[in-house]
Image (cartoon, rainbow, N blue to C red):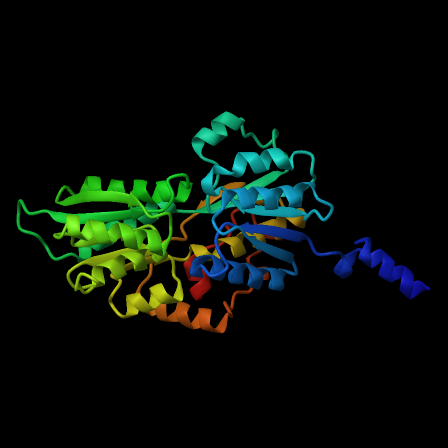
Length: 361
């Protein structure tokens, strides 16, 4: 009888101590289950969840904002509500999810794309207005776009005075903050280099197929192109394929730069087909879980670096790091002790060490 009673209490989450029920987190992944970046993102999150004993569920929306909204509605208004809903402000969906969440009791956490300045102004998004919105964690997208072009220009052979370096750029979706920020960073680097001429910027929608079709036309239109800036690896490979079909050799006549440390991108860097690669932000969801887990334990995470934070995850990856990341991905063992990153019992000066270096330790 006692055993039965204990089991019933455990099921209700009423047993304290080490047997208390783990918090449940639903992550609405905006990508597809076969998109390398979002798959590695989910894997790293799962590694964190396993380590922290968080009950994690992940749903993909295949880059369809309507599917994400539907998933959010079911999670927030349905019978099996998670404790926390983690999502991305892809295609500006955050205000709708904030609206749906009111009164649901589900806590919200934004990753990768936070609210835009316009959205904040329209919503009057103060913490007291949306008490269930507990924070956000985003990467340094603007700096990522900037660093990529700076590095491409550095690697390009010097040009004679009066000569121009011709650049093509492929951004993601116009309605995605990360694409806008990466593009803004690229334009900041352009402003510092009058010898570089941006021939055209197009929106490849993050996909290989679309970027490939666009690049076929653009290489014909601008045969003197010598630098290609792409906002993610899928588009980068599409553009590369189009260039190879013209008989060109990526890394020789045209230098390619992109973002995301997918296995294919890491191998392309090691093969010198890709000249510049930035990555590290696939770890963002895992780091966010550390912060949420602390919050769930009653820790005031805003004292350790702010409620809404941008972290410098996007870094230029060198070949040594590329080999390490490839090995890590193959083993699906990231070797991170997520418990050790907690702010629990730390002095107020502590800052979460969410960087590529923590991963490389």
